[in-house]
Every structure is written in structure tokens, then in C-alpha cells.
Length: 211
Image 1: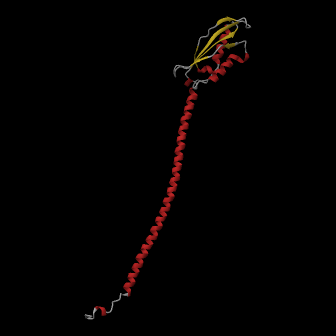
Image 2 (image 1 turned 30 degrees about the horizontal axis):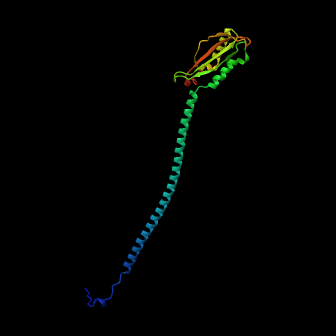
Image 3 (image 1 turned 180 degrees about the horizontal axis):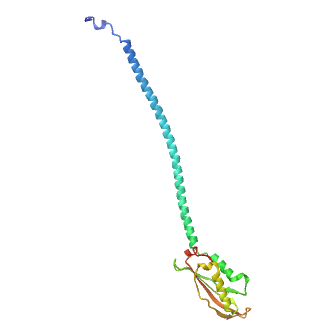
């Protein structure tokens, strides 16, 4: 059956929303708001956690970057040190150890005080550098031995050849002697000669076997 309300609109009773519908709508609104709230809480919490992790990672990266820079600096210093050490080693191997040569030559001249074998003295010592890397220096020493026996000159040259520095010598001048007399000396006779030693190139000194 159809019911028609002929009363004007302002006099008509208002229709109320069904309690069930209102409760359903209210629950839906609460659920949606709760879902948004939970999502916001989770999202903001995760965002804050990720932000803290990012800050921590940036700090770790900064510390690692400092360590890397320090390591690179040490590596550069190590490379520089190795280059300097190599240069020093090359210089040490290529230089002529004149102090050793002269010390041993003085020992040969003195011959532990054995003047019966030879008593030698020298006027000067001349050293001439080699012309290039293939030619070593030359040492020239004009001197004399006491007496007029050629054996003293031969013995002196033999002692020179027996010295350990002689392993650095490439060639030796032929021994020769000239007789001299000096009345101010006792004995007055002496034999003058010249010791000439041509050494190997400096780079070969370190490799030369010592006798």
C-alpha cells in the first residue's frame, strides 16, 4: 500500500538515520582514521629510524674517508721513501770507497813496520775521474823506496796486488825504477818509481769480489 503525506514539507516529521547505519558509518570512520594513524605512526617511525641510520652511515663514511686519506698519505710517503732509499743505494753502490782504498794502501806502505821488505814513501797522490761510466778513475802516486835493490820495488808492487782493494783495479802500470842519491839521507841511495792503478767503473766496485 502506498502512503502519501500531503502535509507541507515544514510540517512533515524528519526521518532519522538508522542506528545500525550510523554505527556502521562511525566504525568505518574510526577504522579509516585508525588505519591512517597507524600508517603515519609506522611510516614516521621507520622514517626516523632510517634517518638515524643514514646519519650513522654518514659518520662512518666520514671516518672511513679520513682513514683512506691517511692511508693514501702513508702510501705516498712509502713510495717517496722507497725512491729515496733506492737512490741512496744506487749512490752507495756506484761511489768509489776511497777511504777504504787509502786505508789499505797506507797499510801496504807501512807494512806493519817491516822495513827489511821495503820502506816506501810518496811525493803526492793524483786521482783522475773516469771519462764515462765504462772507464773508472785512475790513481797515480810517484814515490820511492829506500836502497838500490829492485827487490824492494817488486815486493812493494806485490804487496799492493795482495791488498783487498786490488780487486777493484782493472789494470796496473808496469813497474819501473830509477836510482837516486841524496847525501842528506841514510842510506843515500833510493829507487824512484810511479804507482799507477786504473780502477774499474764505480758501479762494478760493489760486485767485485774481495780477495
